Picture 1 (tube, one colour):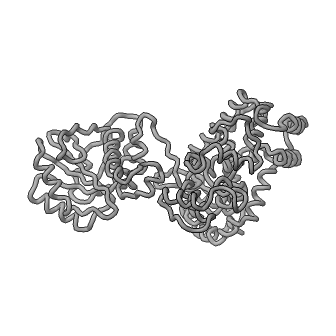
Picture 2 (tube, rainbow, N blue to C red):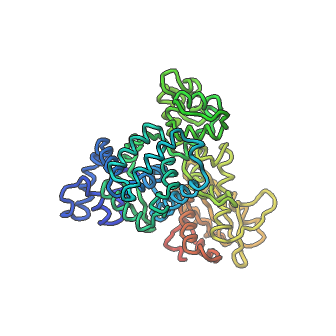
Length: 506
């Protein structure tokens, strides 16, 4: 989310004041709207690289160890790896606690000696720092950071080591509470790193503005989300053991004697940026221009240009792949997430996200997603249909039926072009059809008149509803009835012409 959009959607006046604290002078004297304007005017200071590096240094050596520990987890490990650098406050808190628990669990079953060089010396340094007052001072932390960097020990291995000596995430391996996390959140807001925004459902999110996140990535030497990096590593162009060993060796990464492919990929994620993996460390390293061009072509990207341009396109493509958590028992849930894209035939986006492999799949998966909405979210089982001349779906509605048909198009759906087809479905039905629903990306202006015209001479009304409108209705119903099995009252669809959400009284 862009900086200005974050400011516009800020959760509360208090949150905005905290965010303004770092760079806006006399912010306490300003009204809400005045403060928004002032923050927008000072936007360049928030994304200034020198300013951000200074803030990061001060946090990494903060006198409060909770801030030091949670900074790496909260900002570096989690929020910078979220889609759009955004996560809901509740989910983020759960992710932080789960991360800490995972480190503690790993520490109980993992030997650092098997994987990390010089770990005995490093452990001696860390334990010596903890001896005095059962705490690590700022000066001691600074020394530990420098030794850790010199020895090439990762932050994750440092966390595991501290957990093994009973000091991570806090003394006695006690996890941070949500109150602890909330306090640190306020501190990060005060330093201009995150801003809390609120959506139309009054859900609060923590966001690193896009301009700030891009600088933080440079500071941490990161160029892609971790989940996207793993997806990139599945490409045939870089997944071979020979290629991975070559690039890791050039980066002077210590390799196992008989490395497995999974180990090499993990080492690549930990030790190489995506740019280094694809482009190497010199002009002649990495993939050649011909291979990069071929890769771009297979992804539907522009396949010409200089080598750095091709690499940037590939990395950006993978970095934009979104992380969707779906029910393993019903893979249709993924299609629901991309319902609007399926309706509008956003073929490039759908291929990128792994929703379709071929263009021909788009319309069929649009139909499958609609079935999922009615069956799983609205809790109404569609009727089994026979033959080939029928709509995409049929529902029982008292002593009548409701039919629907999906129209996946890149342009507005014109009802005139399809009314004869729909009329055949209606007229051949064994029961009266109360409503015929047409679901598409959008509709032409004359389609509404065609609905009225059809209703004048038939007992069936035609409802035109966009995919975004049906998805919004599904999300609203799911939120209100997550804990019960109440089906959606189908009367909400008894509207002739364009769907009006205000008439859908639930």
